Every structure is written in C-alpha cells, then in structure tokens.
Amino acid sequence: MAERVLKMGMVGGGRGAFIGAVHRTAAMLDGGVIFAAGCLSSTPERAIASGEELGLARSRNYPTWRAMLEGELSLPREDRIDFVSIVTPNHVHYEVARAFAEAGIAVVCDKPMTTTSAEAESLVEVVRRSGVVFGVTYNYSGYPLVKQMREMVGAGELGTIRKVVVEYNQGWLAGKLEGTGQKQAAWRTDPAQSGAGGAIGDIGSHAENLATYVTGLPIEAICADLTSFVPGRRLDDDANLLLRFEERGGVQARGVLIASQVEIGHENDLRIRVYGERGSLRWSQEDPNYLVYCADGQPERIYRRGNGYLGASAVSVTRLPPGHPEAFFEAFANIYNAVGRAIREHAGGLEAPAMFDFPGVEEGARGVRFIEQTVESARGTLKWTSMAAASRGDDRR
Image (cartoon, rainbow, N blue to C red; front, top):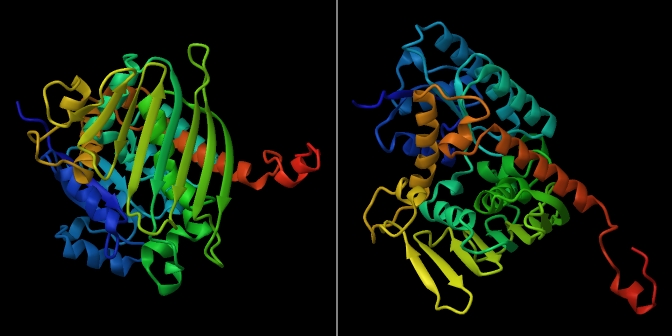
C-alpha cells in the first residue's frame, strides 16, 4: 500500500532565499510530499509574487503567515496542510512555530529553533501538551555515514570516548558583505534577526549538534572565545571553544569546537573527529561519502557510502549504489522523511524524534542553550591565565 502523500506549507523561503529551495527540493525528493501552501516572504506583495512563481494555487498563496494558518484551519482536515516548514530568519521562528503547533499542525523548523532559551523551553512545553510532530533541521545528522559513526560509537567500537574535535570553517564573511546589501549576510549579522550568536549560532550550532548526535554525549561545560574580526560587525564571526562532555564510564571526554566565517579559502568545511580508547573516526561534509576508521594497532579502514557492510541506520537512508555521490539535498530529505513517518504514524510529542531518528524540539532547545552559554562564557575572563602574569609568578586569573 502506497504511503499517504503529505501536504507541506512553508513560511519564508521566497525570492532571494537560498535555503527555501533546498527545503522544498529535499522535502519532495522521494515523492512523499507536495508543496501545497505558503507565505513565502515577510511582505505581502513579495509573498504573493513568490508563490505565483512557484505555482501555488491562488487560494493557498497567502500574504501573511497568520492568514495562512487561518486559511488552512478553515479547510476540512483532510485538505489542510499536514505540516509547516519554517525557513525565515531566526527571530521569526518562535512565534510562527508556536502558533502552528498550538493549532495541532506539525512543524519543521530551521535552526537555531529560537533566539532565546525561554522561547525554546516554551516550544518544548507546547509540543509536550499538543503532541504534534516537531522537527528541527540539523541536516548533517541525515548523512548516511554520520549515522554509521553514531552506530559504531554506540556499539562501543571505539571504546570509551576521550576526545571530540569538530570544526565548521567558512570564509564567506571575511569582508563586510552585509554592507553591500547581500540578503543572507545582512540578517545573519544583525542581532535583532539572528539572535545573540553570529558564527556560533549560524554554523556553531550545527557543530554542537553533530558532536552530540555522533557521540551521544551532552556537553556539560564550555570555555569560549568569540571574536568579531570585521570592523563594525555586531556579532561574532569566529568562535573557538573548549568542551567538557558528560562523564561516561568514569571518563569525562574533552572536546574542541571551531566555528568561523572569516577563514578565507574555506567554503562549507564541516568535519568531525572522535577518539576513543581503542580507535577513532573522522568524517568531512565536503567529502561525505567516505568515513575513516582507525583501530589501535591496525591499518586504516575507509567505509564508503552505499555498501552492504554498513550498519542498518546508514543503509536505511541511502538511495544510490556505491560510487554515485549522495550529499546535501539527500541529508535534508532524510530529516523530512523521518518527520513524515512520524506524522503518518500519528507519533508526535517529545518521544517521536528518538523513535524516528530526527532532531526534535528538545534538541532544538539544547542548541539554543548552547549558543547562549557560549556567548556568556565568552564575555568572562576568569578562564584565562595571563602569560605575562605567569612570568612574574603571579597566578591571578
């Protein structure tokens, strides 16, 4: 029996928005979703024009997200959208997500889920009460070989985890691109739209989620150094963190997290290395179909996506045979597919993400807390030991 095709609505993602097209393509990649309704811009005129360009029916091409919610709720249940995808700048996420979730409509929200932890915890409570399906698009958790890493770590193949190094290196904001009117740079460097974090919120939150997803270890403590290198920039464009993870097996793993948008020569260089007492794993998003495994005292092994020797979690999200690259769109699609399975099986609430393996509202809230705590840590100075003070025999911090 064929699966029920789900109807997607979208808020944001119209003209000039790169990520909206990514979400639509990914959601519809496997034929289980159709794009049925939308409010695709913050101004009614641009919203309508964007919807017309994308072929939305006039009756479901809405000028505002509130009109969209009202219009969809006025339809018979079998005709209205099954979920809404929210791909706006960060400051809009909370109000829209809360309204649709309270109305009983499932939500897929881009990250970071909100701009404050108070808003994030409010959404956790809404999902707990309403029982809706709520996904957050930390899309890198959707890569097959990231799932392979998680499965190998969980099976104990590396032994107790000792160290995690995760980096997200970009160079596109090395100059003051926001001063040229470039839309993506403008809102990402504006605290009113992006929230408290710049690079740490935009790409550092992906790095945090990847480290925690792969290892299963929550971050317990942070020592952070945030910098705004570009003159006049109001948010950080470079982040360097020391991490301490939750203790497991009598060992507290340490970590290093780098998130920078001023590293000239880097595009979307997200990579992770995990070291245990018996072995290590390393993976790079720019070369995502290969995973390197090193066991102590043995030759290096390379796992390739699409092969039968991989674990069930990697095989289940693989579409193509070996040698045919799968990457960014497919990883996003794996998140949407997992959310879709939860919707079809009426399995919402806080338990659904664990059951269907997608980032949920609790992961979204954790990511927002991570951003806030990183900013707070960076504002302090007690973590630093002065080399000049040390040379004087002064141990003041």
